[in-house]
Image (cartoon, rainbow, N blue to C red; front, side, top):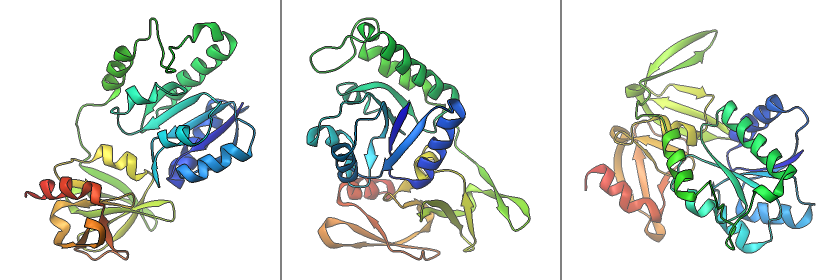
Length: 265
């Protein structure tokens, strides 16, 4: 089976590729695309894959825009950190919807569902909009997704490698998480840097939203690390953090109001 991965985090692509090949060594990952634009270009210049695994939040927009710009002939399994897109996902070519972090048994079940549908396409009747019908009603699917979400027991510490040993780092000692060249890292309040084997999307689900905010695709910041907030071009916000990161931290115009409320405005 030939698979295309549409995902904007390099680490997530590597982990998903590895998981796919562990589940079924006959799977060939044809390639990956990190944006709506790149995905459209790939689909327009290559034969349709047997299956697409597609993240919803991409570097330049939501993956639903792909369907508006080019025909997508392949079935799709959506992968995302949130269940809020479930209804919209099932209005396109979706056969399933997996919440991150993706668990092996859930991926196996989705791939088996794809095989059954390929073998017996008459069982995959859909309405005119492409949504599943019959016994798998959308309301039931959404409820199923909500049940998959773990209780809000947020991480209290991470075990990270430091030189030749493993050391625990309390979450309360972390100033911000960030992504650099496809690797997830964090800095402590004392300006120590450590790497993690999680994507930022996965980390966002593990962290208490009262304490941490996803400023953009590259940064998750702790509320006490924010020292100053500056108005920026095009209604964005520029943050001054402590310790100071190597790159500037901007909050998008769309998230600026949420960020201000989170900070207590």
